[in-house]
Each structure stands twice: as C-alpha cells, then as structure tokens.
Amino acid sequence: MKKLLKFLFFVGFAAGVVYVIKQVLGGARPEGAGSGVLPETPVTPLEDAPLGGEISPQLLEILVDPEDKGKLQLMDDNRFLLNPRNGYRYPIRNGIPVMLIEEGKKYQDTSLIQNGQEQTEASST
Image 1 (cartoon, rainbow, N blue to C red):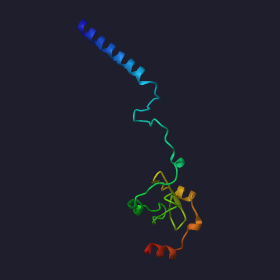
Image 2 (image 1 turned 90 degrees about the horizontal axis):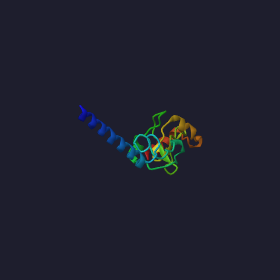
Image 3 (image 1 turned 180 degrees about the vertical axis):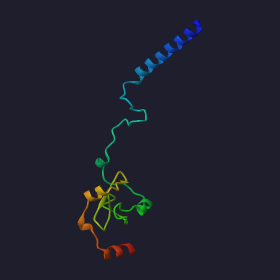
Image 4 (image 1 turned 90 degrees about the vertical axis):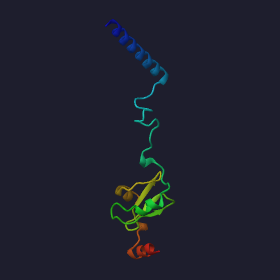
C-alpha cells in the first residue's frame, strides 16, 4: 500500500511539473487562441470585406436570384451579380456571392432594369 501511495505521489508530482513547464514555455495566450476553436487573428466581417473576386463559370451558371429565381449577370469587374429584371445587384466579397435579398435591394440600381424584349434578345445571343 505504501508503494502504491509513493507511486501515485510521484506520478502526480511529475504531472504537476510538466504542467508548470508547459505553462511557462507556452506563453500567455488568450483562452482558445491557437487551439483550433478561435482564430488567432481577428476575422474581417463579411460586410467589411472588399468587393470582388473570381467566380467559376460553373457557379455563375447555377446561381439564380433568390427572389425571382431568374438568371444573374456578372458585372462591374466581378464586383456584383446583376438581376436585370429588378436592378438588384448582389455583391461579391472575397470571391463569395452574397445572395441575400436585403443585399440586392441595398445595392439596387433601377437604371439597369431591362424590359422583357431586351432580356430575351440578350439570352438568345
């Protein structure tokens, strides 16, 4: 029994020493930083991210307006996706299209609305 207690004391002492050394050498980090749970550098909110980025042709082919489910057009040097039926412009931030109706309304440009005739001509070419 005495040997078992000595062994447990030794293991506990060794674990304590290892813990203290790890804390001293590891430096002071905020809780969660570097653990894979939280990023070490602050993340830029999506609304503050710069406009633009590459979109693959395959993605552009399947994207539709969330409100009327119609096709979208790439415009403004890959900065917006345009719905020519209502003038909604969906921003592209860091290459990611923000397909929220609120975002489309926020960037709406009514001068870009095409009538039905122009739209069918554009889609047939």
